[in-house]
Image (cartoon, rainbow, N blue to C red; front, side, top):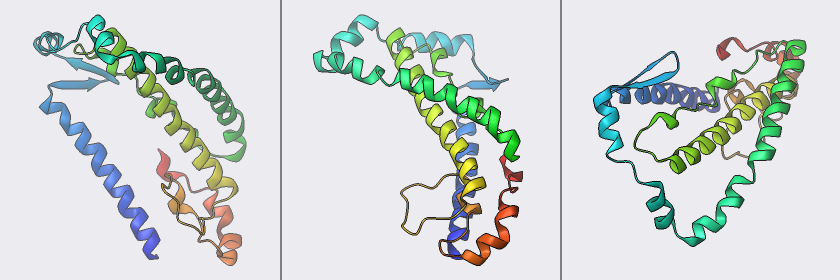
Amino acid sequence: MNKIDVILGKIDDLERDLRGELRNVQNKFFYTVQERKVRFSADVKAAHREFAARWVDYVYDSGIWVILTLPFIWMPIVPALILDVTVWLYQLMCFPVYGIPRVKRRDYVVLDRHTLKYLNLIEKANCFYCSYFNGLIGFVREVGARTEQYWCPIRHARPVKSVHSRYRHFFQYGDAEGYRKGLAEVRETFHDTE
């Protein structure tokens, strides 16, 4: 195993640790997650309502420039919905043919902030949009990563800003022999996706 593989392994371990720590925050803020639904006690919900800003004040405090940019913020929702449907259809139709396990969209598109009582209606809508959009990008990236692992699992020669979850299975740039000998095996190395 070379140093790049060791570093990628450490990144995987750190991401796993981060997910665990994020789960531990539940105790600090008195909520539980049951069957993918967030639950607060009645007392905590009541306390949260005290922190909610009235939407009228929220809009007024935002200022005219923020309000004028809203159409530009919300414009990408239409292409995002189209992307969502096409990527979902792509993996539905193609992944079984290639033997690639499907990506669970619900693992990436997490819509739970609307249950927070300290957010007003506008903040909830904004949080819904951001959760959907960023979750969708994560979902699409994972579908793309699994596709790349099947079709072209070769690392780049130049450093990339951020590597996806499947990159550690890729061959070194320029490793022609390793690529030819190991391609069939790498195309089937999805045991760690579940």
